[in-house]
Image (cartoon, rainbow, N blue to C red; front, side, top):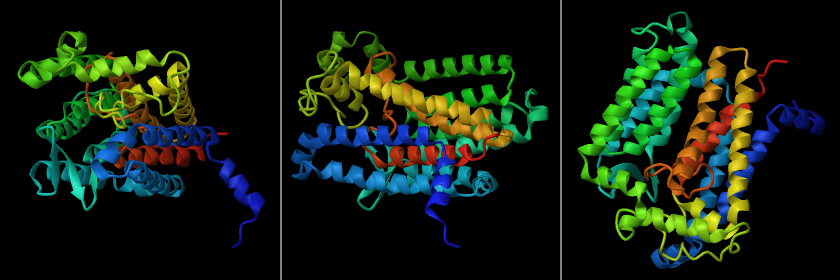
Length: 373
């Protein structure tokens, strides 16, 4: 049956166009900044200053394709296969530890090499965990305030994924999943006393991991005073602060930043916000924060308007993946939290987090069509 132009426009308007606009704006800004931040390094490594830019374009095309699929798919397909997604995510995490396809960088095996590309299973684990937790809390509401049935299973499931991440090791990834669990337990109805107890246990465990790892110990305490060891453990943060501080209100101009000239490590990736601050200034940073705020606003509105508890918690979880990533990245770049490898959603270079972010946005758009009148 042929769809008229008016019907197509009406179907399009059923989606949350504000959310879609914010996501496209973030991704477009990210593409521009990857071009600016990666050119010098790409020319040195690949002999082509546009090499990483064109890869990012390819990632964006793949991500937008995933967004369209997620926005139009039957949500029942995702819900029916909840445990399949969990097993796949766990299997991919295991492969990063024991598989010959794993890629080791900086002493950690967090990536799987697939031809010319690398995949980070952590991104799949975030999405699989959201589907599991939304399924769990939607179907256990009558028992969600009990410890053995309503609290222990999600803790154990998340703990298993965090354990696999720590074996890589990926302490930051484990922190991310723990934060995701905490927020979803909060909206799922878990008793506060259980959450507080689990939070204290998590803090003690994290402290022990930090104290017993010289590498983590140096990273944690270097963030408290990065200038004390500015040429070693505090180097990344110091260079990031230099970039942010030199941008002023309007920045030095697009492409005119100096920190990306091999001063700031990961300038096109985890620390791309420092490049934005240097080249676009306070205005550029404010634009990104505003767009992330729009995603948060639309996530809350889509979530609270769902009739189904399952849909409501799923929407909240998918939005939380984007928001937690944005907050952690900004915290690291500005020196508010210890350094950890967390990319800025839709902006940092890389395919795994970009495709995962588009998928989360696609699910939110899908659910935005099902809001209550």
